[in-house]
Image 1: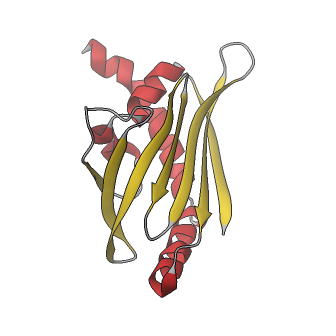
Image 2: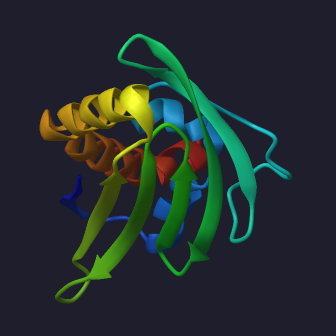
Length: 152
């Protein structure tokens, strides 16, 4: 299938961004596809954690087993296994001075069977339509407003 990448400048600290990305409840602020996280030990995604992610795609209820590979130093990487296989990475790249860039990358591998191939195509259509870029912008906006919410 393919790899999709999106990026946006961000002024937030990498720890603030990681806090948004590892909080399952915060996903409603930035995810273009609503989903629920079940079976997570603890309140946050952390390295070695496993969870069941469920939602709807192309009119079908889908579930993914998610394994968090890394969640530290401004970087979150995970593997989602279900009708479509995905490797997902979020990272904060340091740029010049205090300038940073939030980068997300999703590698989509074809699912098995007809249903898996259809959902792979639907996933790629969402990515092609800009859903990853919307998610990156949403995470950046949520992280930039997080210190204001904490101060209130």
